Image (cartoon, rainbow, N blue to C red; front, side, top):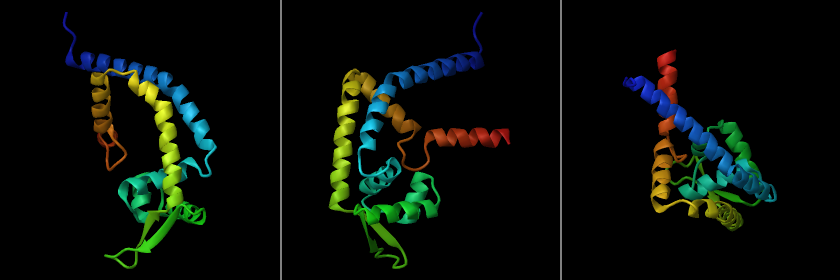
Length: 167
């Protein structure tokens, strides 16, 4: 007896979920170590996310950051204020729209991000090197497909489609 397409899809999905749990177990020790290391840094993880987004985007407005991080503009404004007071950010008037401010990293922020990146490489490097080249490529492609944190991800589209079909 042949399985229906729905049964095969369900079996694949169950297998995927099981695989995700196994992956979660496998990397939890790495995450714990990385988060322990991050607690020793002079700013919070949320603040590091702001710095990371500015670093990868060159500059950003408060509205850009709120959208990218999925937080309110008020929350973004508070983060930007703390990071500026801590010496990690500076701002300049946007050349196209003088009502807007663009946020830029200071040298202190770049040094801090370098420290974080070095630690991430130390923690995640052994796990990455344990994968074959083919597995590394598959992992990168899958992560890009599901979302890299820039714009709407495939995962977000799937969740939105599911919410739309059930409501």
